[in-house]
Image (cartoon, rainbow over all chains, first blue to last red; front, side, top):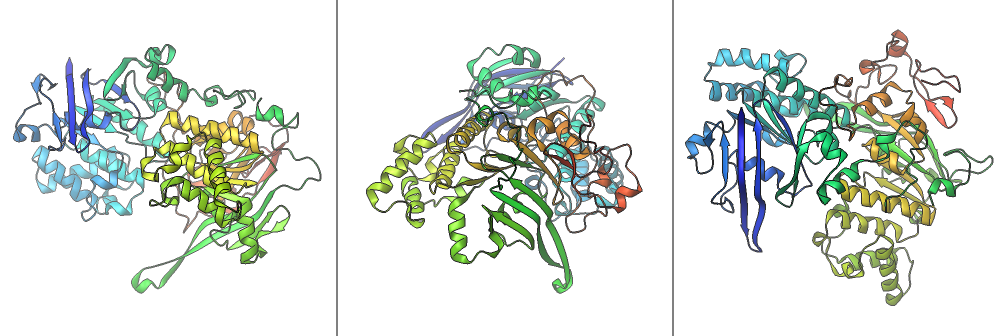
Length: 278
Length: 351
């Protein structure tokens, strides 16, 4: 079953220097429970695509153009009322960002913030929210969840903060999770932990996931299907294996070439950086 | 021609007997005093760098990797005495850096330069690129008159593969990759022998990153530069280094020629780092997940007793000894040293 269908999405920004076509004719769809990677360089329109789906494009200066369509479970989101969008944003579609600290409130404890999400999206009572927030913290792999619940975001490491963000997002039991560079700010061992966690959660909760990243290696490891974005457009789409084996678009070729570093061939001492790509 | 072939047949990182390395660092420590608690009466010591020793042979590149907070950047700054080391010895070209007077230190810094992660923070936003570079030449007395300086600036921009017109631009008008090229040009202006690069490509997109790494490799060959290359990304370090040192909680846990480190890592932390680095190979999707290191890096304020890595160590033979005894770097092979009591130390051990 198709969960998300984006058709000819064009999100433009009006500025002093003219119109910036951040997203310019993007179409793709996602099935229920599917993981899709959205890869591209900074400024290619990945994040604006995500914000458009959530109805979070600041207007002005941004504007989703006429003729664009975003359907979630058959329901049209472009042009939906603010009230309708509130029932979708954070509820049916959850999003986690690169910088957990910028999405966590520094003056509330972790438990209060997860509790708020639970009360808002699931309508549970305070006491129940307290119990469920401990459960959620446990589910995202935070040790001593009862104690951590009473801590403030700054008392946690970057990896822990990202886990808290994920717990908050899960509170609403979304059908689609958009993860926008969820591990870019983290160290490799923490990145591996968070990616493994997201993988486990989306399987156990049968959640669809749109994994946005600039790192093709992350996509290769975690997704089956990938969308390559460049200058506001999706220039290539396909199975990860196919894109690596025979990238068609010149940009994809450049991207795949740029990550097929000697690291891929490590193991033999000859795999030294001797041969220069010109 | 590859750099390695150019070096002749000597194995990477191996020192010809009798030749003094350009840089020798022994037992380097940098501790920071923190005050916290009620009226800041509680004093704590943060051991950012806690006994680091390494050398840099002339013309070689040592990669220094580790996760944030492991002390790699502090190590780099301490080598140049941009932060004053708490203890340890630093020798540059046989001279004792710790004993240098301010005047001498300035001369030393003309021979040893550093490139930072964010070039914007080391460029004056109100100065055109050309003026900023000319300023460096003037301060270090490299070129005497304006005309000569202008020519040198052109040459510098050419060296880092930037169009001469960019001299007229301000830093904010440049792309991330161009700025980093200017940062490298600034460091090269004084013809240094030692170039320290502190996460020079971490802020850049992958294709741009490749270009900058290509430039660094070209410069290594062209000028025979000795480099200390710091990064948190192993694949980046692999591309430019002859030898790699891995840091954890202020200490070097393993140092080895690049091919050895990537094919036969001996320290459990090195192995974990390699396993955690995503590889651009499709197919991991349905496969078994690689082992993931549990937990977070402990605080440098209260590091664990014994081996700093023991609380997270997945080594099957981890025991009481690891908890009590601090392991030192022991020779495992040619130019290969490991600080782990459970790693076999026979010279030819293969894992």
